Length: 94
Image (cartoon, rainbow, N blue to C red; front, side):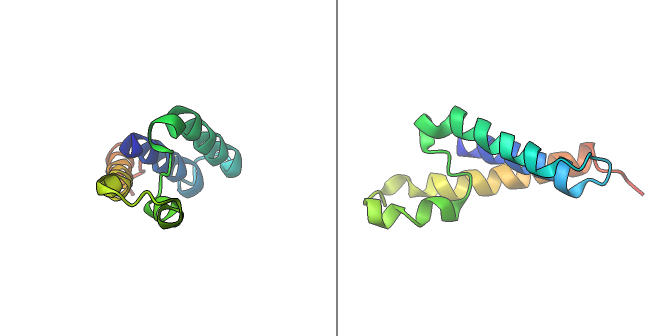
């Protein structure tokens, strides 16, 4: 779940904040994506979408268990996959 949540977030960031062809409503698009990610993945994995977002409160909450790798591997691979997909399919080659 963290892979997919981060994939969608990074993909929207590339498409709205980095691409010069996008309309300048960057904050709205990114904010709506974060909202949808939280609604979709909040009950499943907490919708961290960022390793630091999970690692910060984890020691205080006492949830540093054997599943902590999910919050590192999922977002890193999801962000990398989004960057590769956007670069290869949508980026203007010039």
